Structures are given as structure tokens and as C-alpha cells.
Length: 84
Image (tube, rainbow, N blue to C red; front, side, top):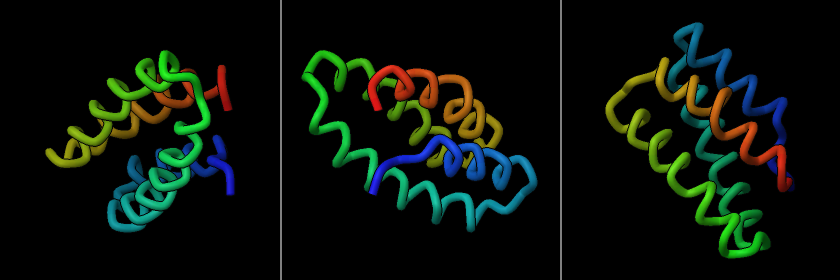
């Protein structure tokens, strides 16, 4: 299974429309997929993605759904588009 940008956009839409439980559930699945895909990248590229993931996870932990959505849409997707 590969991470899909379409699925990440769906997660963003769910967050913005207040479907937090479903968004978090889908994000957790995507995070598992992303974790396995990151292992195939060179170490330097992995280190480029990790700060972005940490910010998104911090937003999730603090229930900052807009911040999480923005992190997914404007930071993670562009970074991943270069490699995946």
C-alpha cells in the first residue's frame, strides 16, 4: 500500500468539516504507510520529513485541527511529492 495524496486531501477535508474521529483514524493508517515508505528513502531525505511530521503530530496531540490540516496540505504533501 502506498500513501496517496488524495487520501491526505480527504483527511484535510474531514478535519476542516469537523469529522475529527474519522480524520484521525484515516491519518493513523496513512502514518503507518508513510512510516514504512520513509524507510526506503535516503537518510538525508528522511531527516527532511521528520520535522514536518513532528509538527503535525504535535497539532494532533494539542487538538489543533486547523494546524494539523495546514501541516498536511501545505507542508507534508509538497515534501512527499518530491520523493514518493
